[in-house]
Length: 119
Image 1 (spheres, rainbow, N blue to C red):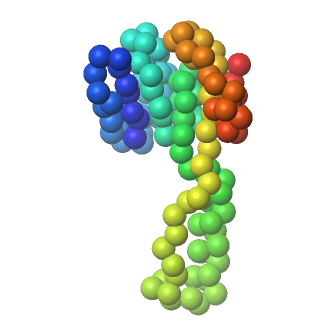
Image 2: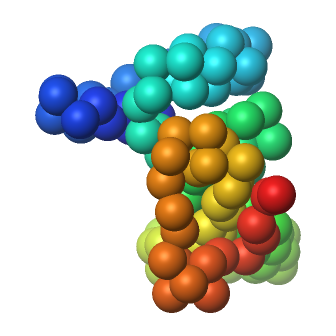
């Protein structure tokens, strides 16, 4: 889910199907920047394309955890016996170039929490 925030409008979640989202990443980030919208994206792909901030699951950790489920299933554990888990690791990245273009400054406390800063 992509969340777009305008100073004059309340936050608006924009639900896009994965294929549409991937195909339109550059368009979405360019329009958000052109419209001076503060946008938070679900993954790193958007920040690489010029988006401001993605905050989402650490996919490497999620895939690693999924592999442990598959391993346990292959070893004969019944699916009903596997616990439901949720991810506890998230990834925050900031695109400082985009922040500067929007006239934003990032406080040091926020920069300290980021996994990656794009300059």
